[in-house]
Length: 126
Image (cartoon, rainbow, N blue to C red):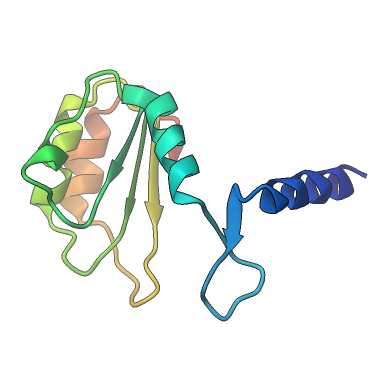
């Protein structure tokens, strides 16, 4: 079965410390090891962009025009200014919102109507 094969591969990755059990109470949740995460970000290069909740010396304001995949973790302070970096992403194909555990947050109509409507290559909106 395909599911069994997937479980075998995942177990192999866990045994090699690619993934580690999360410190949360859920035994079925895993996190990626920091070094593997760093490697994945280097390999992804300018193709992927993850918007952090904290702004680090203005680095969050720089996004490549070649970015294809965008993700961020929602927070109660999701304002219009946070998403201004998307104006530079002319070829964006993926927009993923991950929910934080403390609250449910909605995207403003400005982001949905004004910014996302200008992304002509967008294929995935989650």
